[in-house]
View 1 (cartoon, rainbow, N blue to C red):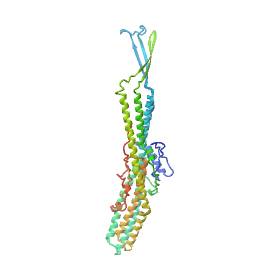
View 2 (view 1 turned 180 degrees about the horizontal axis):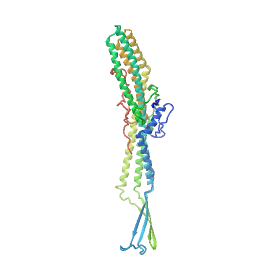
View 3 (view 1 turned 90 degrees about the horizontal axis):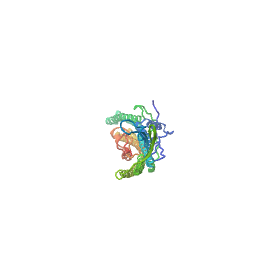
View 4 (view 1 turned 45 degrees about the vertical axis):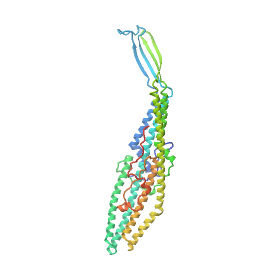
Length: 461
């Protein structure tokens, strides 16, 4: 089944609290992307695992506040070994006793607080999975648009090369051109066909990546009606907005609060716990007896046990505070890096739009016209065409890397920005000459693909 695609890879996630990332809401502008994101979160096993992790922690909260299990003891006290003396001897009886332990006041509430903070940690882990998957989907959509725009550019390139070949053949047939020009034109068209096959394979890979994310068959077709040029640039997020979205920062803060509650609990463990016992002792024909008692635990090993536990959780708290500082600093660095890259890419985009694209097209058409009039060389025309193709391809790469920077910013990724990958546009001279990939885009390009280096893995606090 073919599904029309209207892609806008910049769906803004609402963040009402720190690292509280609700599922992406559909919008009228990008119905397919919204549906794709919802399918991914519904079907992807990583998100399902993270959700069950939250449910698991939620089940621990009520358990932490419950009293310890009571105990029931049954016994027999008998005078002598010859027979059962219950009912005959006053000191012989059956016994039924019930004992209920009671922790020191405040311990149960602290245990519930520690368990509730465990839920927040698992929610932060789930939010990281959600942000990562949504970023992968947006990158996959933008990569698919990039590849298909490159295919369109290849088609235009083939049209121009065909015109150049016909012109070279005409000039050769009338004796005004050389056979070398004709052979060179044919060579470039052959190289272009090779690049077309390579880019077609890249397109299939991009479609397979999106289908894997949303849980569809890998070969299900995805039709696009938009182009990379149609995509609006998302709003630039501030450092405060990125921090509010960061699951790692939320987890570090929560881990510090959890360590503080655990330290408070360890301090209370120096207080004794109690147990109340009530028992009944039937004596057969004699009057029954009963008993009530209270027992108190004696924390006499506090110096080597409870005090050590307090110190342990204090070190944990200090470590978590250092983790907060570390994550905050790294997040600040990544936000600044991406902001600088976005500003540079915006300037490069403007340079393409206001000068390079128009100038390179005019240069190519003028060179081809001069060659047709016998006043220019075929090699010069071919180089002008290569320059035009490279400028068009560089412009597409600029748009793609601009989207990649915004996607990474919204993902609050601690790792380097994952670049959007496309394919080769033509021969080696065409794919690497001219303007090529902008410097700002190259600075973030580590490796092609959709795998995200997300920085330090979120730890279970």
